[in-house]
Image (cartoon, rainbow, N blue to C red; front, side, top):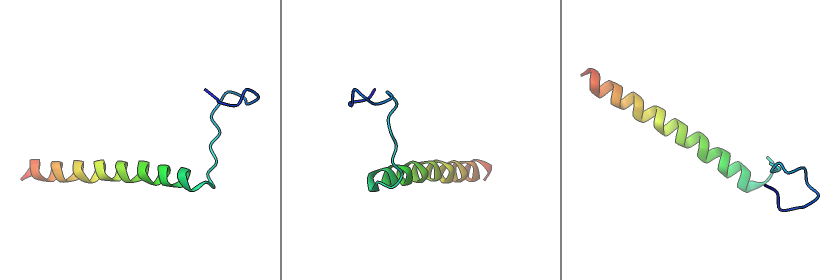
Length: 47
């Protein structure tokens, strides 16, 4: 869904914008957090 009527309809992602970089960093950090917590849970379960 696009706001501009003359756009292609797909959202445009500009990787040079600071907000886009922050969003990508947050996604990576969340994935790393879940991986670390999964490893800790696996380690505790094996004890």
